[in-house]
Length: 113
Length: 113
Image (cartoon, rainbow over all chains, first blue to last red; front, top):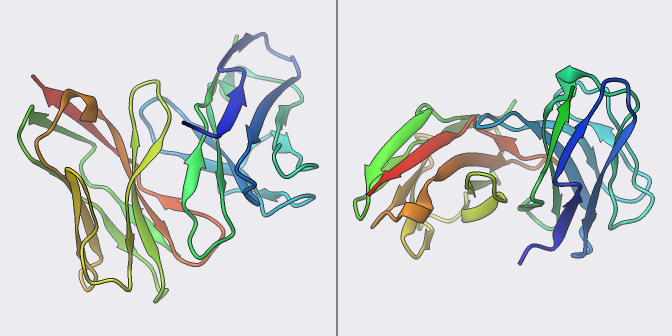
């Protein structure tokens, strides 16, 4: 059973709205990640965090922002959504162990009209 | 830079048959890990199998096994006795000492009854 949760699972909103995608994990993992993935396509890393108060931009430029105030929580915010933001957003977490095995949430499918 | 290449965008297999998915990678690290992840349609991404580079023995998990050729930088996934539930996108991933996993573009596997 997955210990990493994302809400909402599906979201349809209008252009210009501010949205926050929630991600929480109960595994005590220090590292957390946000990926953007179009259906059936590759994953693009957009943000990651080493731990509390740590956030880094990923390989794909994104207009979103993230915060990490608590270990278990890593929300992603879009200040003004646009149709180009329509995609699936996957959250993942990993331990700070020897290797970076990541555990994924179920994803949020975002549609901006 | 670390790269992962999956040269087969799509593969198909008959139920109960065996299929092999290809993956090649490049890294300058001597200590690294390789992963195969499975992403079923509209479902959560899960880890299928993991291989530590320093281990010569190929990893096996039930019907899933890998052929790890370190010198050739090849890491293929073999699925034996394919089942309908194996239909999914499969992603090869590399961890080479950074805080990030590097993913391939994925292979879509179809299982025909």
